[in-house]
Image 1 (cartoon, helix red, strand yellow):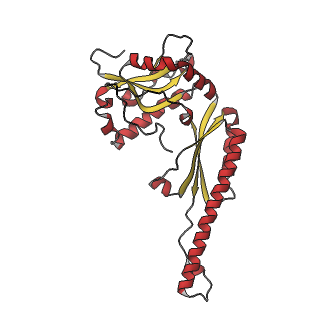
Image 2: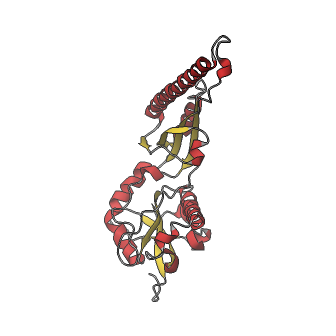
Image 3: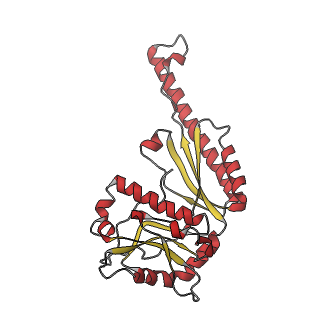
Length: 285
């Protein structure tokens, strides 16, 4: 339990089995704010063998009175997200994990255990379902069609007609790129039926990074059995070979961020009120 001065909060990264497979990594694993990562587990009972991977973090940096401002600090946000992700990836390399959101906080170890115990069987069931599975991401971007080029019009065309012909060609190319994206999405759906155990569709990404490569029209995550991972990746890579109007991006392997059901009341800061909604814990690729 935290010290008498209550100077720390309990930060939870993930749910995991308390397995000996973690014995070699936990002694040297540090998380957010440079804090040591440990396992917090109840006495084994019929709720299933599950534990929280936790750190004790400074209340001054993670208390509910300062956390909203912290999420506006891009440097702090990136540093914390990467530390959170690094812990989850280190655990996932050795066992099955259920990643929790960045800044999942409890007042102390007792409150964290109080949240863990009634959901122990549910978490154990989820861990069993995700065992020997890995998450992969697939994004489809529609490439820009390019600016109209009036110089491609027939030599006899007037300047106005040439411009209209070029605009029509651009529009036709743009529509063709969208048709190619639909074709790619259909192919990926067929691949998922063969190789993936589950699929989640995320909202398309926007912003400068996405716009630099085109319009993101598909942003999906797939839960793939490890035995099928190589075949899944090969099949996805082949999807866009004859579709020059799109860009296909694959990411992973990841811990199963998209396939974890979060606790019903996981974020509980010092006052007992819910913490502000943080961004996804996995850094964007």
